[in-house]
Amino acid sequence: MQPTLNDLIEIARQSGEILRAGFGKQHQLELKGEIDLVTEIDHQSEEFILDEIGRRFPGHAVLSEESGGRAGSAEQLWYVDPLDGTLNYSHGLAIFSVSIAYAQNGILTLGAVYDPISEEIYAAERGKGAQLNGNLILVSSTAELKSSLLVTGFPYDAWTNPINNFAEFQLFSRQAQGVRRLGSAALDLCYVAAGRLDGFWEIRLNAWDVAAGGLIAQEAGALVTDVRGGPDFLHKPQSILAANPILHAKMLEILKESDLTKA
Image 1: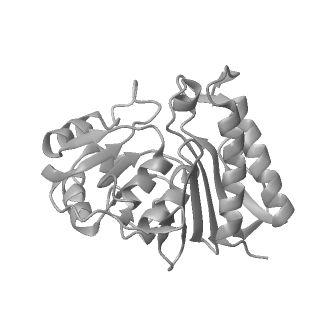
Image 2 (image 1 turned 30 degrees about the vertical axis):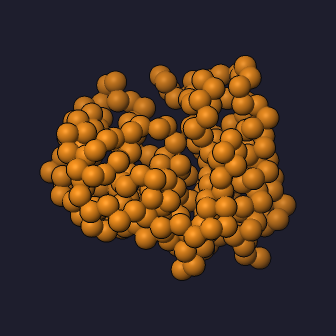
């Protein structure tokens, strides 16, 4: 049995209620690295999503951030980030989301990202466009870097790794109208899809961070690649670049000689 886009939207909305209920409260914080946090809400949201997928679609495989997911059919694979933006969430900053994607035979076909605070659900089905709360969305038509508002993120080992995106952030900051760092890659991609932001680049993410948002951005008209311009942004060495095709080419030209493309 194959899921529909409505299945992903329903699961994302319901798990988002778990996040909403816990937002602004004290949390049990654990460190997965020097600064990479996980809370009990991450686990609660993930458990709900995995249980729903298992109940509705038994035998499907799941790749998920906290538990690693569940084994199953490789031809039917889900990508789950139960709380993208945990650091924001733990500080009471309302920039976070639930991200769920589904791939059939290795091809992303469905994606949903839910922001439970703004009650915005971004969703896409391959070949059928992207939507925000049921309304069609498209990327911006910005063609010049000097007129663009970009967004990026930094790896968790940026303190110690020389390939850390700092130089690229400085370079783009000098050429773009502005560069933001919001803390949720899934929402970064959705904001590009909706034309709120013009371009996004980042290195060393995980597939569950970008699977749903990447598909949504593609269906909204973005060109989504790795930072070298290759089509595979889901497998290591992992990176992502998303923008409308004109701006994507200009961002890629800047990135292609950088340390990021050697990572």
